[in-house]
Image (cartoon, rainbow, N blue to C red; front, side, top):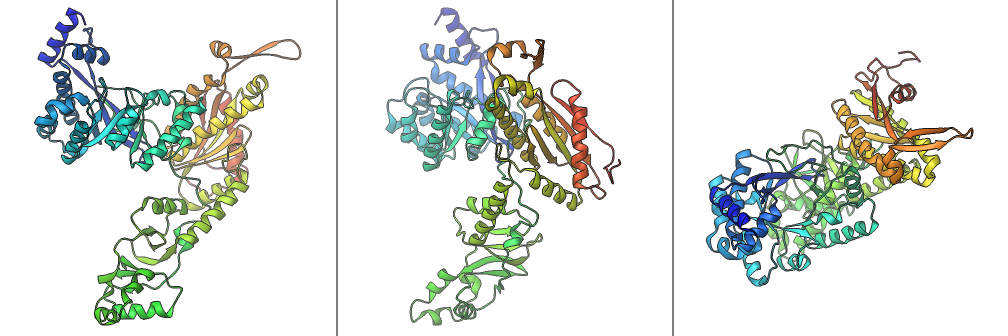
Length: 584
């Protein structure tokens, strides 16, 4: 620490000359911003602009606690002023926690002044010095939780003893150090490490946040690795900013699987089991259960809407002694029914229903209620029937999927296109094709070529499914996508941008430096081929009525040649009407 740095530090603390930046933490499952990490910078003109140097000098000067508390107060105040959504992740030094703030409750007073509820603040423990007294630290963490705060552990895998911190303090969130995310798409060891950490996080009921996501390839790799890893942070989404975005500008991969064939919704497994009214007497229902040994669960309804269920096993245990009949003889069914139940809309896809059941951990899942769009009772569903249907769908999809990418092949593409047309609402049909791919394949071999196709397929799947669309693999480097009319342009531009970023990574360093590969022909001439790129041909279909699936596919195949006339990543849009009988 120099005398100049010490002088700057005193001036910064006295004048509160600090800048608060915010970096979003995104939730890939909810397609939204989950919260923001507050980051501190010193004055740009000072030698203490870097936060690392700022806090190192404060530590040497014995002013770490004063600086940390100032940063905390300014971050809370600025977060409230900007009216940012979600949670505020607030970096806090462990040393500060066990000293003044633990005694005086300063953080709570800061947020009370700002009007923020404690439930929206996450205390993010950041190490600059090791923790020596874990018992005192546990007391401090419990103290914060009692006030309503959540707790996060920063930079797992770095620092002094972060694994011990996790074990001792049991935080609500753990942020994985960016070292383990950087280049994860190229390093299998990092993927195995992350799988192990995810298992630990689940066992401890802790949410993992992946820091340092900087490229499309890293983003796609994380999505493919584990759909449960929902919380992500990094330059790929947004850099730290004085005025951070309040909504996502980057489409994220969805968690949905391939769409079911037409008709494969909750309605397809509905059993029309007669319900009972809320005023029905218990003996009447008991008689019904005894008369039908196959009856497992009955819905209780009021004005046509399910309000509870009665499950066979739980119900019959009420009649285990000689006084039971007299005890329940005049009681209504609603008094002994279970209001905790799973209710599914009849139009819900089977995959979405399966996810709903998976997420409902505190509710018995064997039987569930199926209702119409107005919430009126239609019948019951059973998890065995759901599993049977989903298995049949998956077997059929696997049979007709492209063997390289696992995406739906031509039969499923045509069926889905027919289904889109039958629904009568508009959509955009797109054809995706690679440029300069044959030259790449010839130069690097089919294995490297397959890697390019698989990478493109994962990019397409991520972006198209995020928008609620469909993606299929026609064969080779050709793909078909179907997108909502309101989102297709954004999706296509995101695909083009992301692939442009990814493409150089497919090449060796010498070819990367010259922007492509030079290939010698049989006649001895040399031809230069730029990086592989993507051509997209799109036809928006506002009126599906006169359209036919095969004619759309044929027209898109022609349109792709128009797209390929433009060098580099390109988009060609056909805005004329649909083809009918071979004409337009």
